[in-house]
Length: 178
Ligand SMILES: Cc1cc2nc3c(=O)[nH]c(=O)nc-3n(C[C@H](O)[C@H](O)[C@H](O)COP(=O)(O)O)c2cc1C
Image (tube, rainbow, N blue to C red):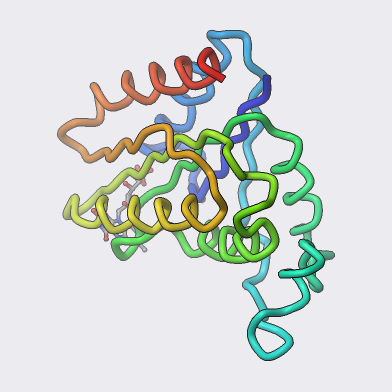
């Protein structure tokens, strides 16, 4: 049983890193293997071939040599997923969005994520605004890829302590349920 964390977090410490750790520890506590992917060096979708690209038929990105191909293979090898991101501009981070945009095209509906369970975690900082819109963005990614949303966890400074516990418990339960 492998849980893959798709992370939008650029930092090694702070609130979002603590949530990633909670998810990883929750999954490990049930004996699951955990791997984390980050996407700082990937480029965005090139929107090639008049819009639909070659990825719709081939299920691979024509520009995947930048590290996308390897990340896609890692996604295909996992059993369950957690997407963990800080809220930036009321959305997921740009690095994560760029990856999910490309993955959605390659794995649209009948791909590797079809029927797979995904835990969604978004942490806001400053204003605390934007959790809902970031989670809604992730919800749409799951619907386009056919993934099954296991839970939505929205975190801010006030609720961080008990939401960290919730993230641990959700990841543990997710790996047990699967
Ligand atoms: C570019 C940028 C945009 C941000 N936009 C928002 C926002 O729209 N709403 C919000 O509540 N926090 C916002 N934040 C704060 C982050 O959500 C916060 O850093 C995040 O919760 C993670 O906390 P951490 O940095 O301690 O890991 C933003 C931070 C950055 C760097």
